[in-house]
Image (cartoon, rainbow, N blue to C red):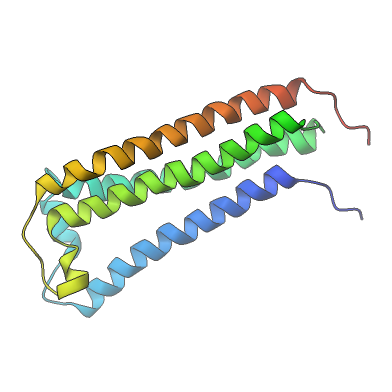
Length: 178
């Protein structure tokens, strides 16, 4: 049986798997740290900080999971174009699909990882990794993360818009004869 050229389906599924592994690894580090350090209840400490900087940690993790699901769901759209409709991708629609893939993975996941890191830094919990104890809360540190997060979210938005344009171009293209 001849292998179908499902390049965009495969790329987005592989990206979702990689992003899922990254967020799983991040959470496992915290779980292992909690298991090895019984003096600090990390999740309780973060939840008590939810009104402040701890919120960024939880939102970063939750939104990262949403990005993983969005990447996997995007593969279904490409599956519909490539398999069901047998649409051809032009050079332009391929370029837009690359921007889409990079925008979602670098922009979306990058912003959420920085948000998670900022939450850990602002609550003082980041020092558990470096010094073995909770440091002082520092809500002012959050200000230094706003621009990088905003820039990465802009990259995410550009990627999603380019993906939409690429979908439309591929949808309107001729089907492969096959």
